[in-house]
Image 1 (cartoon, helix red, strand yellow):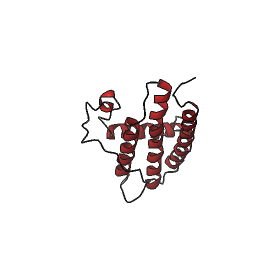
Image 2 (tube, rainbow, N blue to C red):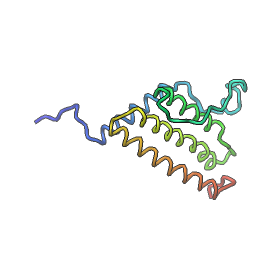
Image 3 (cartoon, rainbow, N blue to C red):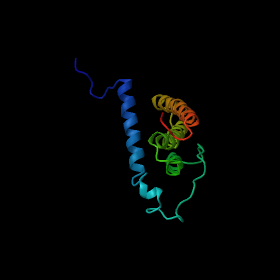
Image 4 (tube, rainbow, N blue to C red):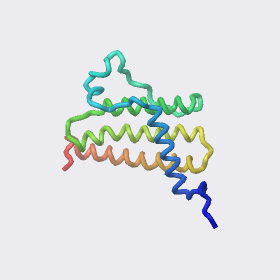
Length: 149
């Protein structure tokens, strides 16, 4: 008996879905940079810089619009993260909005999917990323100067 090449295990389907979503998010946000030129203002004029409103998951917007909102809030948070040149500190302050962006995107997809695997994946992302954010907040409280020691 030959194995059906179109049949996948739940783990394989999860990986395929994750890669498809990651690819979609990456292509939807081409030209997105967290480079030094954006931080020091060389590539972004001050008239173009604005803080986006807080992310709100609502069916009043399309899924694409929600993803754009989540990316805008995440990008703003990462670009405005307080940096002090200490790798441990800077990593944590940039990862907090990055993880919150994942939470926001997961909340968005929950509004628009009935697929049980996607719903389970999104709920897992929300739980795991919120725990990670709490761990990062605790680390910053215990390392106010940003020392990794």
